[in-house]
Image (tube, rainbow, N blue to C red; front, side, top):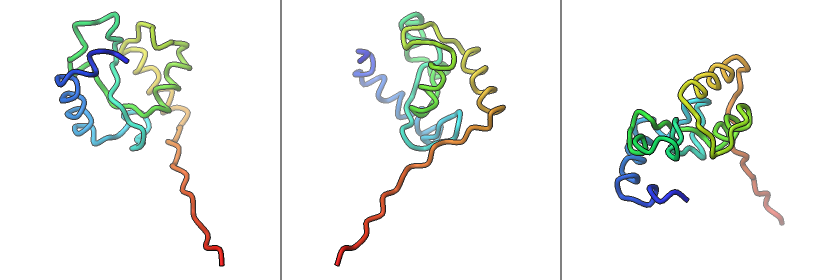
Length: 109
């Protein structure tokens, strides 16, 4: 885990970004498994770690799809341009967020 994520400064900023974006993935609109993610990787852009303009909310599914589609590992230099290309591709493919599966219990007599 990144050490900055343990700081009070990050936790406050994370809550602010989640609230501002209504806990919604900016790509697919999902409201489950949403996290705050850096647009430009903080390993390569340390000055942007706490910049709100470098943060967005994405669900785990879209984050994983982004890194898979653009063959980025979590150690790669991602940019705003990469995310914009992914969002356009997402719109073209008309992908929908996965719905949560609900388990219904049946009564046994």
